[in-house]
Each structure stands twice: as C-alpha cells, then as structure tokens.
Image (cartoon, rainbow, N blue to C red; front, side, top):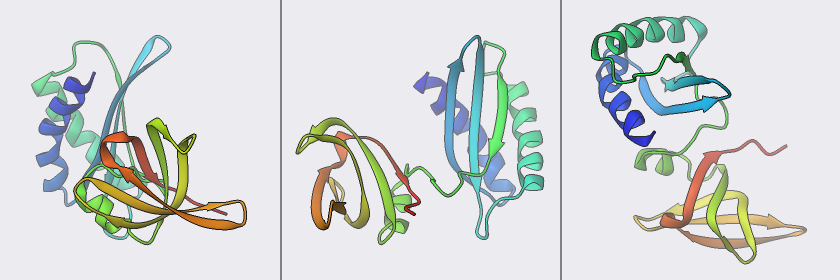
Length: 155
C-alpha cells in the first residue's frame, strides 16, 4: 500500500498547497472490509472543520479524475492533532524541545518504545531525553531503526 500512498501524496500535494495548507500525512489502510484514505493537513494556527471540508472536496475532485485507487474507499481529511507524526525533516527540526513517542523496529536497551524530549536531530540520528522512573537518560537512536515517531502529550 505504500505505492498507493506515494501516488496519492504526489497527486494531492499541489491541491493542498494551493489551498494554503501543508500535507502532513497520507495513510491508506484496510479496516475490516473497508478501505480508508486518511489525509492529514495543517496550517499555521491550526486546521478547523471548514478547512477540512474545503480540502476534502478539492482532493476528492482530483482523486476522481486521477483514479489511483482501484478499490472503493472512504476519504478522511483531518488535522494531524496534538500527536502529529514526524515525517519530513522540517517536522523533526520543529519538534526539537518537544516530547515525542518513538516506536522502534528493534529494541534499544530492551525497549522498543521510548517517550522523551527530542533534544537534537542529525541526518542519521535523534537524541531524546527519556524519563526512566526518577531519573533522565539520554538515548541516541539511529533514524533507520524508527518505525514511527510522533509528538506526544505527557500529562
């Protein structure tokens, strides 16, 4: 399905940008018998329901014209929310100093999931300061080992 998401991103990027929004994420998944195309958009100050409706209408028009998905699917256009995924390099840079949730392909020090403050980003690694019980520990993670990374809200 990643070829589908890549194709959809290529099709939708100019449409979303023409509306003054940023294309944050494209996800195409099967849940039960149904397929869902989920597109997350954002803009400075945040996205509201009318932004989503406008974007959904324009995206739907171009998707109907280009027809990159053979199955019937539900289109869902929304805000990335408080737990925005980090996909692009600028997402990583903008997240420095914020709390992130990182899921790994393979464990580091016995854990495949880490939560902490993103301290720094390089081309190949990230550094997070994770709270482990009562102390903080800095963990350097090779970006190739990251399955998912997103902002997180810690209460």
